[in-house]
Amino acid sequence: MRMFALRALTIGAAFAIAWIVYMVAMVLTVYDGLLSLIFQPIMAVFCSAFVVGVAVAFGQLLRLPLLSRWWNATGAWALVLILGSLFLLCFGYHIGLVETYTDPETGCSFQALHSGVALGSYFALIFAIANWPLRKYGISLSASDEL
Image 1 (cartoon, helix red, strand yellow):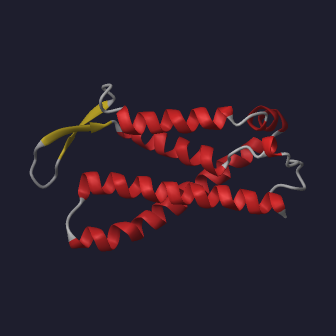
Image 2 (cartoon, helix red, strand yellow):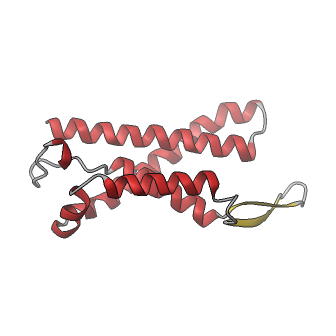
């Protein structure tokens, strides 16, 4: 039962972080006044729930014995994934990982973080949080204990 509670906590944290990152990205790109304040938080819930669900589903691959030993040996892999993702999301634009986009309403071109980098980093961040290794906290990760 303790394992379930800890895993639920990591999934909840992943959802909260996903929602925050989504909202920051939307406010920085498509803020459109009152309608954005009403509908973007709702869309953030749907998109965050989808991404967390996919991350948890992909995390089931970590139950394979070889991957499980590697991932659960230390939290360093997840921490590197989190820090690398945050670095790319925050500084990717400044190090040249950009793509040229065109505003459909004005026709003006602008540069922003490359979509592959943005989406990949977002998913990697959520994956690492939702599937944070719990073994180092003295919790057995046998197949019968996991979700």
